[in-house]
Amino acid sequence: MIDPDAFAALLCDWCLEVRPGHQVMVVAGTLAEPLVLALHRAILNRDAWPLLRLSPPGVLEDFYAHARERHLTDHAPLAVSELQGIDGWLRVDAPSNTRALTGVEPTQVARAARATAPVLEARMSLRWCATLWPTAALAQEAAMSLAEYERFVAGTLFLDRPDPVAAWKELSRGQARLVERLARAEEIRIEAEGTDLRLGVVGRTWINSDGRKNMPSGEVFTGPHEDSVTGTVRFTVPSNHRGAQVEDVELRFQDGEVVDARAARGDARLQAALATDAGARRLGELGIGTNIGVDRATGSTLLDEKMAGTVHLALGRSYPETGGVNRSAVHWDLICDLRDGGRLSADGQVIDVPTMVGGGA
Image (cartoon, rainbow, N blue to C red; front, side, top):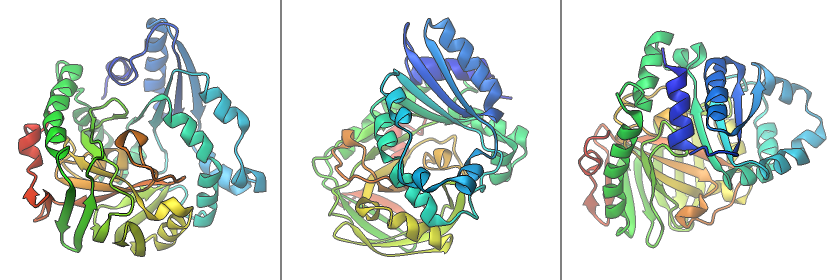
């Protein structure tokens, strides 16, 4: 069992750096109650204000079942204004059903994403973090018992270490070496079965993602030049996109834009996402996973994109701190596994990620 108080301390001190007087919003499902209560205590103990926003199972399904036209074309003004008044924002995923939106019309999901784009922009301007709390649904998705899944997640969070913060600092130092090497690169090439993709990255900033915004983390990422991406890529790691399963995605890029796309499962969801807006057909992120604690795919993108030996590419919105300028209501991370004969190279030189990071934390 994960110690919720230790987890809350890591989130408050390493991820959000909660300070006296801060207003910290916690958005979570009710199945994350042990962690939410621990966060409530931890934030109060740091002389800050906890603002809890809890949702019971079934809320998303109810939204799409009962939403009127206004709910799919606009957003509540308070959703933006309350974000503008806080100092930190934390999301805790704790689903009761990982595929709850499978039956929802994909175009409806895309419309809601467009409508809430201003909320996303307001949230991204904050000190924010996304994490998860183990549930039976997540364990089932990962093909584990709940107890096994809890142990697995604790390892990815480094909560099984005597000093988790020290472990994250160690990972950060290793990733800094990788960032230093990649900062000199002009072009990245990704090769694997069904994949040969080139991305221009000259002048773009590589970010050391060491658990400050995602917990767990363990990746470095940048925003490729929006018109540079050329070639094909196949994503063999299944993706859960907004509550629906999408598998075996293949994309072909020309001058930075997706010109051909298909998915063996969930193709309608893929096509609807690509049609969300003009930016959805371009890449906003290239990420390289480094977390050796994530040693298998689990069905959770938050975990799987950190898997050492993988790269992930995000359709849609760029992170401005990378120098990327792509704008979209979509940010969908898709994962390409390089562990079985794949290769990542920078300007023709193979990048050995485990060596540069020091084998992970």
